[in-house]
Image (cartoon, rainbow, N blue to C red):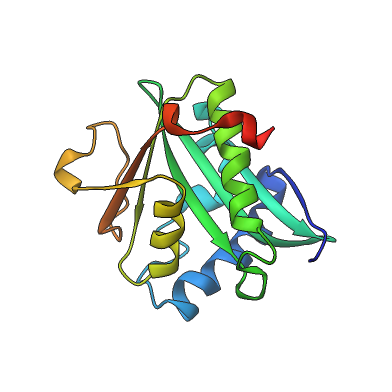
Length: 171
């Protein structure tokens, strides 16, 4: 198992974030999204930190290998975004995705966020299984709260009420 660290990301990391996420979206999974259509990737402080959310990255040495972000939407809720792990760092052997999600859970608890929502696409089947293993329930688009910021490419949606999460396990 490789040793990695997770830390909050700021605008100084935007280039690294873009270089991690874009190839996964466009080349690996053929998701029809451009960098220009993701203005949040140019100013993560405004889109994530300033909402009361956050943006975290997993590093192997100085190389960014995974990300997760949270938009605080108000209503004691948040939207998970930008959950990506570089292909060669995926899986339980590394545990990077799980560690990133656990950081987000702890942050959410500390900031009184009780409900998490996310959107994804059909082709990301492993991601869907990952979310379901972590207690997320599929949700119809029509059942999303009005304050959830829907991304145009997303077709599948999930919800987790954080009272169902054992936070002490993550401490």
